[in-house]
Length: 112
Figure 1 (spheres, rainbow, N blue to C red):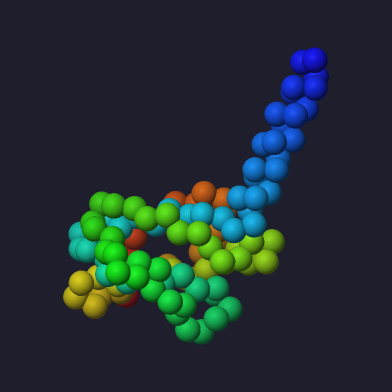
Figure 2 (cartoon, rainbow, N blue to C red):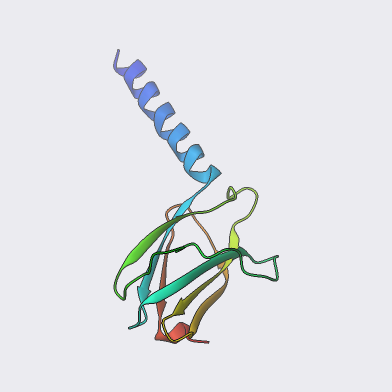
């Protein structure tokens, strides 16, 4: 009985990890000192930014937002990520290697 439960448990963990890789969720933290008004995440192979992920929301300084990516890690695992603040200043991270549950932090060092 213990072997069966053990097998079922690890099969469940494996399935959950596969689902997470299909469309991974990453957390983006704003530690710039300013409110973020726009957040863009695009594949590194695309020369334009995708749509604003914050839509009508903002990302206050010190806060984080969870973002579900459009592609599985097997399809794409490198992204460019940009946060734009209330003054129009941009903070960009280029060619970011994404792993499941990645945490991406923007600080003043990322100011363009």
